Length: 168
Ligand code: S3P
Image (cartoon, rainbow, N blue to C red):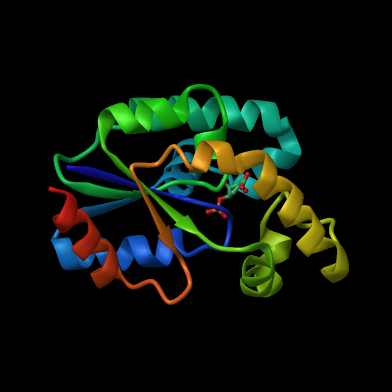
């Protein structure tokens, strides 16, 4: 079974993904890390050198061409479901889980890591909540196509596992 975790930057996809994979005895695949491994540069550097459109193309190609283990949890990037037909592809190839969180909570969690994230690095602390609100509004339609929508506030890997079991 493939479990795709989707949601905005800072919602906890990577951390929850790691914990969920450990609990289930599944492999963890981090899509951004795979892209970094394939290109030999960080996502931030790739964005700077080639621009967002090139990154989105590469992201979609990587998503669809990875050699996935039979059972795995995939932590996707915040924008992954929102470009090309990626969300439909993920829904056809696995179970998608949207970790939902409101803009103020996301902004707080992103405070310390803004420089590493190409979409946030030029924003001021004041501008970030508004930016996230606008981006979330743009993206929510894609995120809501997930098989499961879970509130990210105090969400644990056990909660996610229970929700998956309840559905199967
Ligand atoms: C992005 C999110 C990032 C990374 C890239 C673009 C986005 O992943 O893929 O910086 O568009 O929301 P995380 O959600 O893991 O930070």
